[in-house]
Amino acid sequence: MTDNNQLTPTGESQTIIARSQKIAGALSSYARALTFENRSRRNLYRLAGLAPRTRDRVFAIILTFVIGVAFVLPVGSGVAYYAFIASPGFVSEVRFIVRSSAPILSRDRYASDTVEPKAKVVQDTAVLLNYLGSPAIVQDLQKNTNLGQVFGRGDIDFISRLGDDATQDDTLEYWKNRYSASVNPKSGIVELEVTAFTPTEAYNLTKLILRLSEEQINRLSSGMWNDLLVSAQKDVDSATAEVAVLRGNLRDTQNRTGVFDVDLSAESITSVLTGLEANIAQLKSRRDALSQSLSSKAPQLADMDRRLRALTEQARQLKERTAGSSLEQAGNLADYSSVFDKLKLDLKVGEDKLRSAIGELEKVKLVSSLQLVYVDNFTEPTLPDKSTYPNVPLSLFLWCLLWLTVSGTMCGIVLFCRNKLD
Image (cartoon, rainbow, N blue to C red; front, side, top):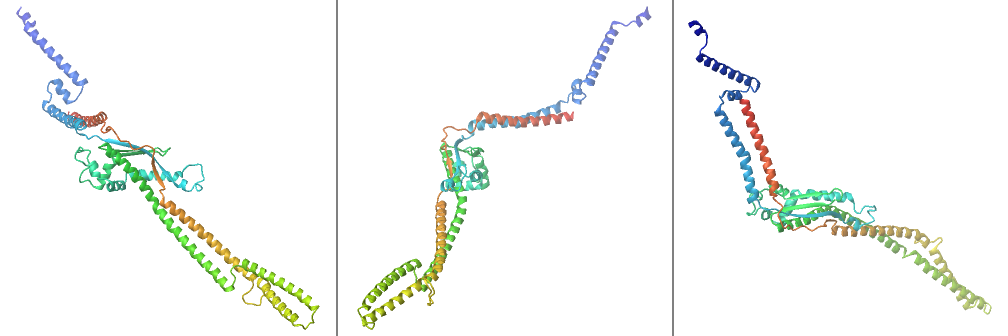
């Protein structure tokens, strides 16, 4: 009985065996979890109840700091700025097109179906848009208004304000954020928006920019027209000198020949010659009548013969002055005709050239004195009655989205580093 009692386990031994089996089952379960779940040391510690609490606390503090610095603080600052600090901005808007006055001044020069020379208008529009974002517009604005007073007053918030010590480059970069301009490529309509911190300042700045832009475009053409004016004046001076020389040659020829005008001289000689021939014919008739009643040696007939010879010689000389061979060195009207015709033709050509040069000069003077390009705003600059900047809902949404992305990226980096250390 004693041996049988020793071989049979008692109640106490059965309890110990059950406990050991339970522990073995638990260890087997932990082993399977470690094998199939995750082999990282962190999960190993967690499953075993041995997690490194100090390191977890450090990473938790880092994550809290990152979220606070990269999300909570910027978002809170943005809400405070846009809701309570940001100065309201007022936008004045105007629409305009660039027009050229060249077709109006000379409509026959542009014989086409287009209303204006398109290439010139497109170029002027491009120049205007480039001028709006160039240092020249800042300089011109400074000459006509005080940008420091408009954009750098003390009542403007510190972020939107133009600094007192801003350089020209800083002012240009600031100005680029204060305006926007866009052009419709089909119609050429330019839309300009100017932002300021009071409605009146935005309206005045827009009107000033329109005027400065128009002056700038016309200033580009003034140099060309000045050169044309100088060239046209030189042509007039040259043509005037040429005409003066030709008139002097004609005058000298008239003085040398004694003939003012060949046609007038020929007409006067013909008139005189006609009268002489009439007198000769009349005198011959009288002599023939007297010779029948008087002797051939009568003094009356001798006097008539003397008069006939004088009139005949005079008539011969007049005929020689008009045409035929002349024994005088001065020549006759037939000789002078070709000389005077050439002189008059040269003088007429010179006068026509002078007349054309004077016409071109007057046209250049007229065009250079007029405005060639117009910035024609078909809508008046608006006087804003409410601020459009800042757009608080949109600005806060974009601000939160930005810092949410930043904080999420930084948190991801921290978590990545913690996982690498496991």
